[in-house]
Image 1 (cartoon, helix red, strand yellow):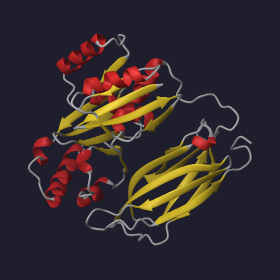
Image 2 (cartoon, helix red, strand yellow):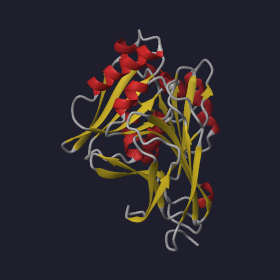
Image 3 (tube, rainbow, N blue to C red):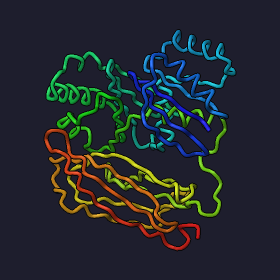
Image 4 (spheres, rainbow, N blue to C red):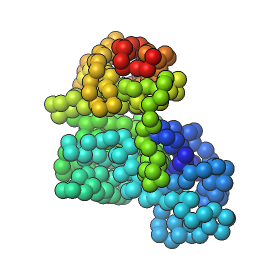
Length: 343
């Protein structure tokens, strides 16, 4: 088992990786010392390693933290420190973004900084580039000012190359103030939000360094199909996993948040481990306006209720002050065919 901690402000965002499953935990206030929090977490964990992402990870800060961990009695290598660039790469690997089709970008908006991380394939290697846009948004106070500043940043950050996937991370994105900018962001791209992104990326990297298998061997009552959302992007369909295979069905669940416009329904697919489509399900969203100028933020949740039945729940989270959340929900049961689940 590996535990990853991303410190931002006075909060610790924690992900736990155990046999390929990465679970997000509720953020906690860590007190006055980040390193003491790491040491306490490491000593409480019976086995495995700790991955740490600092928001301001300079070489001296990391070196001092490593030395403090050793002095506390922890073994060399028990705690691994990652930069945000490394964690960004971990996000792409964990989420399975296809860099051959386009770049992945992460807009990271903290209390102190606004940084854009671009992950892209260059010949036979993958590189991560960071661009600091703090100066362009730090004087924005009102929602309208921040929205306008973010729109300008988007145009500059995405001016070169093709970017197919975007993640929004950080406390700065609280409040859904980004109405104009999100309209531009969603055109031809998949957009996701989450505060545990860097923690999940570090957890993935730490687990793979440890040699932990990404997916455990299948045993009775574990799922053998993955269920995900299908989005139309640049003229082709792209599969976004919601629930992965290889877990006991009682524990199999997933959640994501997306921005959409111009639709009144979503498509889901059931795929086997090789990625082959076994079934396609269209889920109508009655009441949504099929208008390209109206952006919806939707929370999509999936969980198995039986070995052969998966419930999909979608909730309308509105769009800031422009369109308050209606919290309207849509639910549908996906029934798996014989052979797509363990009996």
